[in-house]
Length: 285
Image (cartoon, rainbow, N blue to C red; front, side, top):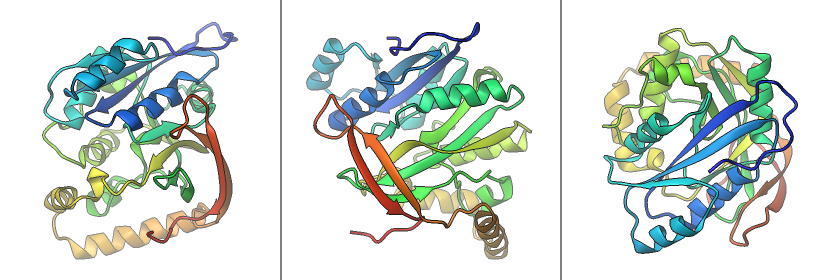
């Protein structure tokens, strides 16, 4: 279903397609959907939820809500679900938002303005606020342009929750590796950059990433998959890691920031506001 939008003030309003892979995360999913549904601005948007079969309670919720288009069918995993959503989509700008992630207020309006101002760009990376399971800000991650060498040898420094791509990337056959468990996004971005797709950053907080302790990229299987793809290249890892830290220092990445964010917690349908002074790292609770 279309996201509610404000008055259009451009002759060519941008259309977004947001894909959310879902499997047995009903509470998170409701909050994620709410964070997309309340976006407003000079654009159209569709939210496509692909669920792998969460059961009768999910099916009842899906039949009663009107903010997202839901498809329930078995898939091979998260990245296969995202690919299926991309194939169903109609938007000019595509993104995916996992169940435990949310867009902040005004995110799609900011992204729409950025792509209108940069027609030559293919990919946008934005800033992300890491929050605890209770919604409290614990870290601020400023987007720094990723480099293929660093991605291959270390990690992907940007977050999928604040990554947006033009439709032509998908139309040209650049899909995620559905056989991966946790690092298909890193492999995908690495491949896009190697092919010469152009990217930029928007240093404004666009989304929240909830630190639940169950994120696939931080699991044992995710670490094993990462090690298998990257290999054991210690010198390259040291070199690219040092380069990345210098780039972050120059970009002001390590500066602490005062943030005030509105996100959906247990008390729907209103956003709850949280504020804190946060830096890059935080102490595990």
